[in-house]
Length: 396
Image (tube, rainbow, N blue to C red; front, side, top):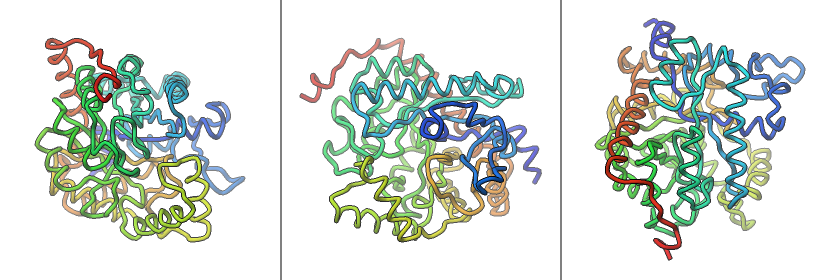
């Protein structure tokens, strides 16, 4: 199979990349100092790469479009979270405008394909965590107006209206206001992202949404027992309503030994009174734990197993890729950076995936979902206007 030709016709649309937060932490968004227009893997002074992502390696990897995560940590709350999210959005525009010959901002599936026709990679945006809207549907609408095309309902901590996969359950899924958030996202044409949310929140959102939902970067719980992964019944419901699970590469979500190691780290943290939802305290603890107790490795075959399982349960039309590059320190062997997508496609081809199957995985499935959400929004807007609901009115 000619993977170069395959990727030329069906480039990878990756569901989640945290380069923007890396740029914020490393250089305060100074893309002169962090020049992703050059191959940053060739850092001979340190022997390591400062990022998993740069434009030359994206080209090598066959990436045609990237959902840049406009993530902010849950330690930022209220207006601080909103402001930081807007700074992330601004960084996405700055990054794209800095490389107009290689990148083009995109809001729709047609925009993505127009970028390809002009030889560019498409820049899309997804907001990772409902704390970014500060319980305000007006803020949600303005993020959409700026081009944000999905919202992950939670990050590692609960929002007041939705339970996270990695926090103690409070709402039991979505509250009444949480359901209204989903409905308003449907009306806007903003994809509902179920990565990071609890299984009950997944089920509630799938019961409410009028258009297909996504997992921007999650894998299969039946293969690796992690609360961040999708159970089989959720994958079946996702299939029935036309959604997509974009398989992630994070070791603790794709390899059971890594998941068990992570669980041991959580237990050690709990002894110190620290939870995973407490990012400000958990992150330094986690780093020190890793230094004392090295994390076991994962490899490319683990990701293959998750792609195969999602295909088996949800079907070939409901699987995609969401690597989470620059969102984690360690990656599976064979998938070390954004240049490595062809290695994964080659392994899947050896496992019997056809060119048509791989084209669905790389981009055709998510393009279909994007168009379904866009078309659904146009239809919903004929039936109802912007929601004026407030959390205090619906949830008390």
